[in-house]
Length: 201
Image (cartoon, rainbow, N blue to C red; front, side, top):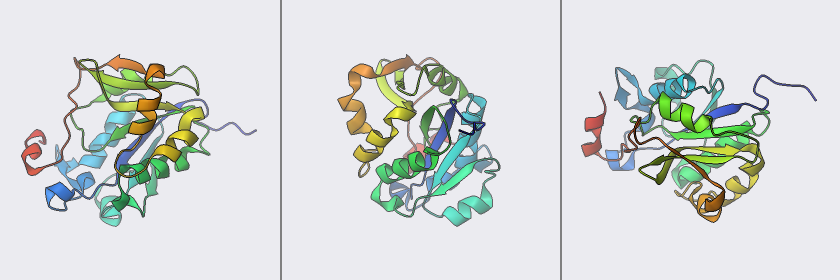
């Protein structure tokens, strides 16, 4: 078997396909944060937190995102079914990672700029094996990013439907999740509505 650069490591998986329905149809990946598209910021966070390889799932306005955001070095995955919800993007991303040799995927969402590299590094540090299952916690409540060992990907993809992502899988395997408290280094708000745009700089 040929060993790849990613074999046994944790790859970043950024879900950035949403169309921003509650933002008047403004794709979240293209929202501006610190002078650059939000997707670019989120990729930088994953890399700074220790993910050398980053797969990015695009959907809404994918061509414009590719044009405006610097995604050099990323594996870009287009999800033609992005309107079905987050589950389809998670499936697309895990499918892209399937042949990468990575031991786990650290999944983050493009619309959570309050979660920075320190939280990513903490959750990444919970990786032990391809069976690993870990998640950031905020005051004890599970949030993102989430780490899925490669041995779990097929079952997670099978359960990822609609806009629920991996919620059903995580609920069914709650006892196996290592919670990593990140409330002291990150905030887990989402950019969902116009009122939330106050969080962007």
